[in-house]
Each structure stands twice: as structure tokens, then as C-alpha cells.
Image (tube, rainbow, N blue to C red; front, side):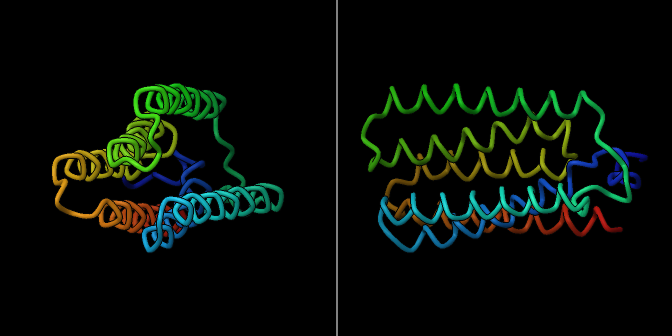
Length: 173
């Protein structure tokens, strides 16, 4: 299939997205070892590192594969994914105002996974597979209330690190 053999050319946003996933995944994984406040701090640090990596990589053109530029429709898909994610986050915040609750965090993980489904169109099939696995992890976390939510938080971080590393690696293949 051409999609798998030509991923770097078809999905030039894949490398930057993968680098961001590694950084945010590390933040999520580190955040699994503390309480809600620690989770939020680590999450913000991971996101900030990811944005820094993308900014420097974009400015230095390292993010893009040998000059291949993403078509405008991929940027539009990226924007739509962020808008959908933002809207769904606002729904969860209204529905579960207790930020210490299991449903709040598991639904947040689910929403992030869901927005990866949309990003699969602009970042490739690895991102789409990550979406499904992250959503399954979050749904299991909602059901298995006897297991500390930090376990599912850590799994989510590891999934993002692995998918991000694979996206970066494939982008150099």
C-alpha cells in the first residue's frame, strides 16, 4: 500500500506531531507519579516542551521531511482537530466539575484520543491507531474503578511516547 511506503511524503506533519507526542507523553508519564496538581504541572511542562520542539524544528526546517511541505488541507484538518478537542474538553469540564474525579480524567484522556482520529487524516495511520488505543485505555479506566487512575494515565503517556517515536522514526525512513 502506498500509504505505508510513502508516509513521510503523504504526511509531512508526522515528524513534528511525533516529536510533540514524545514530549507530551513524557509529561503525562511523569505526572502519573503524583497527585492532580503534579499531573497538571507535568502535563503543562510536556506540552511546553513539545511546542518548543515544534517551533524550533519548524523554524529550522528539521520538522519537515527534505523540504516536503504539508498541503493546506492538512493544516485545516489540524485546526479542526484542535477545535473539536477544545469543544469536547469544555463539555467534560461542565459535566464533571470535580477535577479530582476519575470520570474527569478518563474522559479527558478519551477526548485526546478522539481528536487523534481526526489527526490521522493529517498525521497518518500511526496517529489513527494511537487514537483507538488511547480511547480503549480511557474506557477501561472508566470501568475498572478498583485500579488507580494513575495506572491508566501512565499507560496513556507510554502509548504517546511509543507512537511518537514510531512516527519520528518512520519519517526518517
